[in-house]
Amino acid sequence: MPGDAAQIRLGQNADEDSLRAFRAELGLDKPLYYQYLNWLFNFLQGDLGMSLSSDYPTIQLISDRYENTLIVSLLTAAIGIPISVILGIIAAMFPGTIYDRILTLGSVTLVAAPEFFTATLLVLFFVFFLDIGSAVVVGGIEGKNIFQLLAHFWLPVMTLCFVIASQLIRMTRAAVLNVMSSPYIEMAILKGIPRKRIVIRHALLNSIGPIVNIIALNLAYLVTGVIVVEVYFGYSGLATLIVQGVQTRDFILIQALGMIFCCTYVVLMIIADVAAIVSNPRLRHPK
Amino acid sequence: MRKEDKEFTEHYVAEFSKQVSFDELPDAPPSGKFRLSLTGKIGAIVVIFWVFVAIFGQFLAPYHENDIPFPDDYMEFQPPKPGAILGTDRDDRDVLSRLMYGASRTIGISFAATVLAYIVGVTLGIGSAVLGGRFDTIVSSVNNIFLSLPTIMLGLVIVAAVGSTIPILILTAGLIYATVVFRLARAIGMDVKVMDFVEVSKGRGENLWWIISKEIWPNVRMPLISDFGLRLIYVILFVSSLSFLGLGVQPPMADWGSMVKENLGALQYGESVISVVAPAFSIATLTVAINLIVDDVSAHAGGKLTKRL
Image (cartoon, rainbow over all chains, first blue to last red; front, top):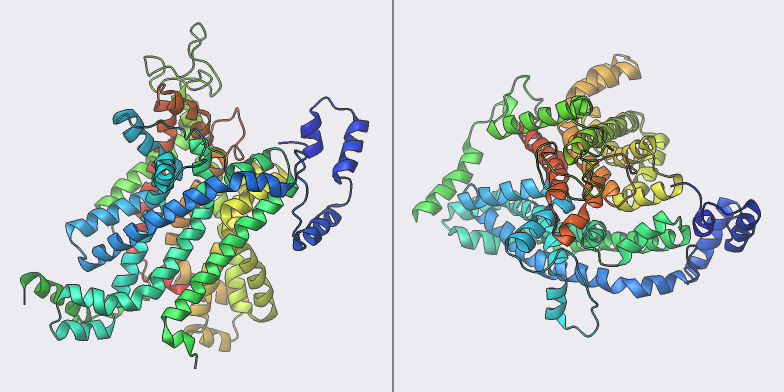
């Protein structure tokens, strides 16, 4: 990928003079630190700048595209997280059983596989074997209610659900089992309390902190996992916008999107830390 | 008490009442010999197979990666048939040959990047654990800044800024993952540093190099080795994802990630899907196999790595 935004917009055959003029127009002739500080100064005032690869304001490009990304992420979070957490807790309730082993083996396999492998498996199974739906997400989302949206995005949502489930199940199971090995649980076992009651009343409450932490980490992961899925299923969203930005050398757009993705990531991390403190009284009152 | 509850009780009580010898303590140094379990062996066989393909694949491949096996009969996405057992791709090239050429790039780039991440991360990590003070503060804070960014975003931005050639890919992936290795190496180094035998050797007046190579390194070796496998998986996924997005290995060079991307059309138009399935499946078998080995090794390496962070 040679050249800069001006070169790419004017094409390979552009002569030096017009390139120079166009660079000046876009502000690319200034030194890099000046360009960046200028952008940062405007950014802090809420101005995301003009896109270099098209003459639209960056904010408009983003507002045209953010809906798909947001909807897919929210649907995945709403469906994937409760199911995986519950499956993880059940696995921790029956450690060593066949159910636990299948779940652990499945998540070990999926956690190491790339997103597009999971997506390919799903497409092969549903689209080619069962002949349901199509391998691309087509059509708009205007005026659709939540169920129609789910039907619209079911393949990307399902892929991401599998991807985050593989992490969540493993980590939830580990978090609950970690609490299960503490002395007060041993005490409860010795008192003869039934297993279900021990897990639900005694262990679960103390593992809420770690579990919330895990959920926030996985949501942060969704932010990046969504990029591959959007390209795979070929619908437009913020992630495809950033790939386009890279291909057209549109630094203003990349910086704006990078800032948005990273802020989301940092906010989720802060939520995870706060949740850990809120759920654990010992962290709330440090000695 | 029901039977299953009784088993459950025994399961946990046994954990505590069992006599634990020093060698079984979670932080004990691993004993020299251990054997892979069945899953570990399967993983090892698959990994050896792919390493073989990566090294010799381009000499054994039936065609060059950009050759067209049937010049007289140009048609994209031909189904498997004699002469092209995995069919042909979007540009009618032999999928098997591209897969074999791509293996060396995907595996080679990832391996080189992981080695780089380890050289940089371990040197700086153990260095700042040993030196401490201002050096540690500066390196750690720079590291934390990079650690707070999502990896693929960081990769995209770097590739956008400096372009995408193979050396740059290795450098990018290596430096991004060096941040994680740094944290791990520093945490482990900190752990070991305060142990008595290190204090003793310090008191004896040994120099820094001796302390690092003879006192600390033998104790941090096993956890780092099993983490190496895990990191390799993440780097393979990272590099293939970048290639999948069209920003990694550039066409016409073959690479597993970009092969999936190139042939996505086959899925969308319902053509011969093997051109997409083969590279995606190759990545998955490789990473899952490495994961099986890592699981096996880390069970023997003593202690959970994540707990040290």
